[in-house]
Amino acid sequence: MIRRPHRFAFAVFGGVLALWLVVMLFVMRDAALPASAEGTMLVVFEPGTSEETAFAAITQAGAKPIRKTDFGFIWVVNGNAGALQQAGALGTYKELPISPVIAGCLAVVDAKAADAFGL
Amino acid sequence: MNDTASRTLPWYFAPMLVLVCGCIVAIINFGIRSTFGLFTLPISEANQWPREIFSLGIAIQNLVWGIATPIAGMLADRFGAARVIMVGAVLYGLGMAGINLANTPFLFYVTAGLLVGTGVALSSFGIVMAALGRIVPPEKRSWAFGLATASGSLGQFIFAPLAGALIPAYGWPATLNILAASSVLLILFAMPLLVQKGVSNKAAIGETSLTMTQAIGKAFGHNSYLLLVSGFFVCGFQLAFVTVHLPPYLADHGISKEFAGLAMGLIGLFNMIGAYTAGVMGGKMEKRVPLAIIYLLRSIVVTIFILTPITQVTTLIFTATLGVLWLSTVPFTMSLITVMFGTRYMATLYGFVFLSHQVGSFLGVWLGGKLYDMYGTYDPVWWLGVGLGVFAFLVHLPIREKRAESFAAA
Image 1 (cartoon, helix red, strand yellow):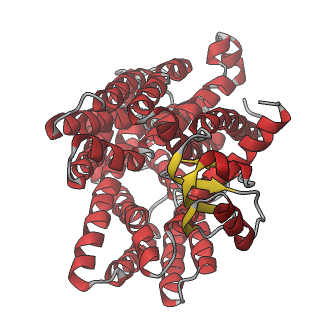
Image 2 (cartoon, chains in turn red, cyan; image 1 turned 135 degrees about the horizontal axis):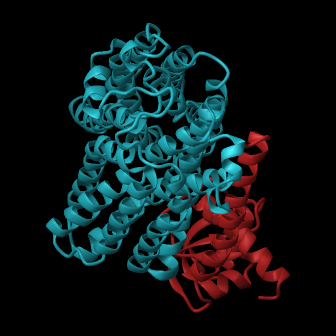
């Protein structure tokens, strides 16, 4: 039968999570706003970016900060996606109806993977 | 299924594959269901409906899910879990895709409420657990229940952000179609479960020779079963109240919705750990005592949470701890059913226990809102939940953890 049940469970869950991450990577790429997008959006900076640095980048991009989240590197702003990315944002998204923390983490993965693969 | 028997079966009935597919069924079934909150705004706005129409549709879904679960259990015990899951997958898919065409409240109630609710019941992890419970040897049964329950939790954890990203990427109608297609995939993953046939009219070795009607009657005449049913009512009350009312409670105490989202996500993550661990523990010790302690711990954790200042740290500690205690009741409850009544009618008897859970869920959500409106605070419902937790602790202790006399082997 199953000789090492915990290892089996770990493999099943790990495999499903790995598949999910790959799918999420592609979906998040499609969910990212094009550079021409304007309006209210979620802007994600490198994790660890201070609130002050993020705020400065937002204003530098000519965007209007609407509110910050509990995580200083994720803000809800009104502005232009391309300008925000030029000002140092990793990615811009519509304000997702989920915790932006999740979107933020995947946005980081998304940006780094895109960079690595030259996408 | 012993090793000798399994060696004579084709590869697609290999126990390992059956277990993996059972887990995937639980992941998809529970996962899709957890995405509905994300559609509240887009569907209501697209149809220019007040939110109560969407809410009523989901309330109908939960009610139908509860009522249909014992029926699904009866069908699974009679015809086998795989066939029931396959029918459920079709209904689930039709319901999800049908929401796109629902331009009147009635059609929405039929698709999102009736069809999805029935589909969820017929393909739920309760049915999967019943199948796995018959496939694995008795000493691995509780572990398999824990595995299936943890899989359902994993589904919630992965599908909510996936749907949350699919909606802005492709639009909510396409997201519904993708989820509908995912639910139809359940048919494929249910196929290996065909290895577990329905019990038909024959009793397997070591199982009761009672008919289904007799078994249901005898179970409801068994005090320990009634105690289990009443205890699971509390589980439903507490979980549904927290799921629906914790985010607004946190908002009342100055916690942002983003942080509340993270905190709720922690419940899902730690739930996997708790459910799996409960399954492992259930295979090594008596089940009623740890089950009773889970309810007592919930009461203690809630008491500490509401008596201390609500901060981000206390919120995270609360949700992580509650996550461990979240669905960890399920493997113990299912295991107790098999101990008392065997595996022949386990899906049916679990179905009735789960119906009690859903009644509790309904009251937890409804009373949460009602009492908040009356008193302007959630405190009365929190304390009611604490009291019910102590009640559940007490009613689980006298459960007799042995085969019921009328369910003695044929």
